[in-house]
Length: 356
Image (cartoon, rainbow, N blue to C red; front, side, top):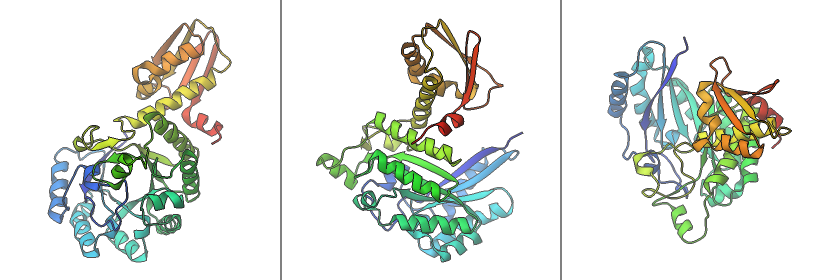
C-alpha cells in the first residue's frame, strides 16, 4: 500500500527577502500576512495532525513565502527548532524551505543540515540577465549555478522555480532558462506564469503600457514546452501555475495575466491533444475511434468542455470517438483502437520524440 503525502504549510510572508521584485507582493501571493513564530509552528502542526492519519503517511512541513535563509539566523533557528520534537518522534518526516539563490552559502548549509531540512527550493525565475535585471531580482544566473551545486554536493533535494512572462522575457528565453537549469540536474521544478498583482511595480508598468502580460493561451503553450523539457530530463514538475487563494481571485488582487485555477490541467490537456494529432496524423475519415485511458487521466485527455475530443473529431474527420476508462492502463498513457489498428503511447514517450 503506497503512502499518502501530506504537507503542513507555514507561511513566512515577505520575511527575509532583501529585494522588492517587480512582480511581488508576497502577502497577496501567499494569502497570508504577518510573521510566523515558533508558537505558530507548533499550533499549525497540532492542528493539522488532528486530521492526518498516522498510518501510511509521509508528512512534510514546508516554510512557504519569503526567502527563508535570508531571515536573521536566530529567527531561522527559532522556527526550525519548533519542528525538531516532531522530527525526533517521527511524526514529521522532512522539512522544506524556499529561498533565493543568493542566500545559500556554507553557513546556511550547516544550519539546514543541523535542523534536518531536506528539500530546498530556489526562486530562480529566469537565467536571462536582462529578465533578472528588469524584474529587480538582485541575483545572477551564476548565483543559481553556485546555489544548486552547493546544495547538491551536500545531499539536499533541490527544487527550481521558474516564472515565465516577466518583463523582457520571451518564449525562447524561457526555454533557454530551463535548458540551463536541466544541466544543473535539480530534482524538482515549479513553473509559474507571471501575474500582475496589486500594489506591485509591475502593476504600475502595466498601467503605464510598459509591460504586457501573457495571454492564457500563450502561457499554456510556453508552460507546455517547459514541461516537455523537464519531462525529457526526468525532472518532476510538481506544480504549474500559482495556487489561487481567496485574496488572489481575478478582479480582486490579480489585475491582469494568465490566472487559471487549473493551469496544469490546461497544459497537460494540450499535450494530450498534440499527442493524439501525432498518433492520428495519417488517419482520417474513419467512423469510430476508441481511446483507452486510466481513470486518473480522463479529464486531462478529454479537455475542458471536451475540447480535445471535439477538436480531434473535426481535425481527423472522425464520426464518433469513444473514451473508455481502463484501470489496467498506465497513468499518462493512451491506447487508440479503430478497426484492427491499435496503438499505445505515453506522454513520456511523446515528450522524448519532440525536439524543442
